Image 1 (cartoon, rainbow, N blue to C red):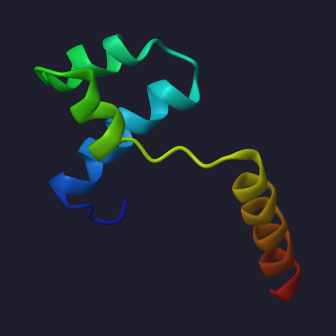
Image 2 (tube, rainbow, N blue to C red):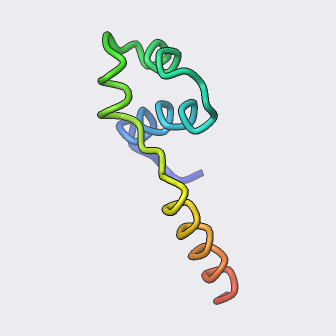
Length: 66
């Protein structure tokens, strides 16, 4: 498994529950933030549908390049 900085794992830990439709307050509690805004505005990175579609297409194109 590749090394990941702790900073990046906090962002992943915040983003995954939001992507899975878990209430933002739960993600806030997992990360032990005092405010939901900290979790949602600083730590979550959830792509919109257009971004997800573009990423999926890029992934498929790179798979064909092998």
